[in-house]
Length: 163
Image (cartoon, rainbow, N blue to C red; front, side):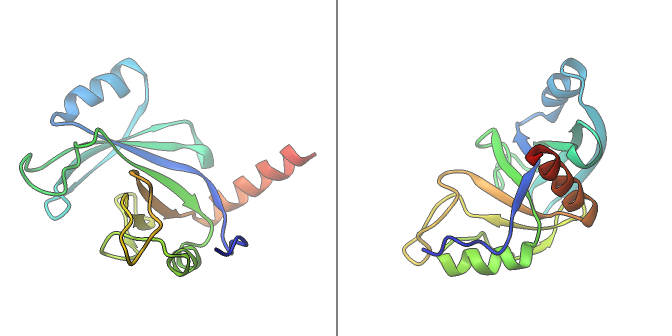
C-alpha cells in the first residue's frame, strides 16, 4: 500500500449522535453540557431530523449533530449505533477520495455531495468488502472538505506548535 498521501486530515469537524428522541440528546448536550445551538437539518431521503450544536469557536469549532430518525423503522437507522459517525476535515476531498479508492477504500453510495452544513462530504463505509478491503473498521467516517480559512488556521496552529 502506498504511504505518501496527497492530502491531510486536519482535525475533527463533527461527531453525530443518534437517538429515538433528539430532545433527550439536546437536554444532555445543550442544557446540561452547555453546547450552543447552531441550526437544524431534516431529510426524508436520509431519514434524519437533526439539531446541529457546536463546541468551541472559529476554525476549531466542532459540530455535534443530534439526530433522530424521521421514521424509526426506516433506513438508514441514524440512531443505531448511537455514535453514528465522525466527520474529519480534509484539505483536498477530491484528491483524498481518489487516492483512498486507489488504496482499496470502500465508500458508501452517493459519492462526493453537499452535506448538512453545506460543505462537500463523502462517507467511508464502516465495513470492508471483497472488492474494497479497506473500510472504517466499524465506524462510519465522513470526510469533509475544509474551507480555506480552516486550512489556514490548522497550518498556523501546526507552525506555532513546531516552534
